[in-house]
Image (tube, rainbow, N blue to C red):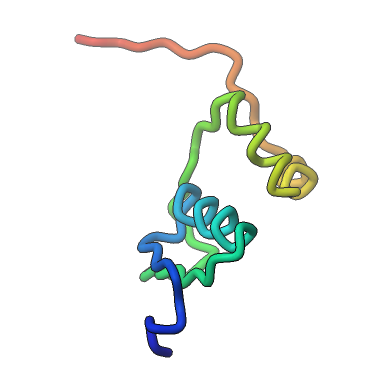
Length: 82
């Protein structure tokens, strides 16, 4: 694999890197996404997704898959600073 064949290299295949790769590919860029870990993995990424992210998940046609994972909604939270 030669990087000369790609327009963009993205380091990190977590939520942000994967989303960037999808959008850039949709715009016609040749994207190479690098991730050192093997998926699926035990560590969670994106443990909290704000309501604004739902629009992006829908735009990427991932909403049905997301809901099929039965996410637990967070209705309240509290900051404690001791």
